[in-house]
Length: 278
Image (cartoon, rainbow, N blue to C red):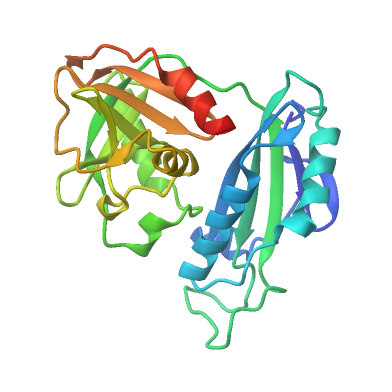
């Protein structure tokens, strides 16, 4: 089967299934790296500046060399959009920008004591068609997995998504589509791949970054536009809460969490579009 995912690595374009990279790459071996997922809509990379700002900040927090900057990326992103035939009105896609610490020699987790060398780091991208999802969903609060509010990894969009995958597996085994995670203090924190917004007593709230949630781009836009307030959600939801899981690729209203039925919010798509354009 031919992949519909376009890829770029080390100056070469091709199917993401066919392009190769060294098996010694620390992103592959240790999930030692970062990524950003950017919505492509009507031929444009949406909120690219915000994504790149988080990318740069994450690299600095993890002691990595700075990832490629916007001036270099813009031509590459534009070519990717054209090659994937997503440069027309009405088309949408998902572009993933990846930055790993690369292959630095030796085995294990050891790092050089010198400053990080950007020539040893590795960048690659993928792009594929994607339709933003606004369908209501069921979720399950993970019992097995909790976010560590004290870990620097919780503040960065790293390649390590094993915890989210296990939470999703747990939810699916119990008949739900998505998972919610608490932090190690027991408070609701986020979704398995999205930020958590809760409408409670007429106001939208979201867990603070101190909870261990990822600093999502759409979450930040909602706070900047004063549509949402950052505050503690608590360990459980309330029966009259309306709940959204939001990221750059869509916004899902929850109609059920665990065994508790909720009233799905009618604002999911409208709020997401407002944040995208605002």
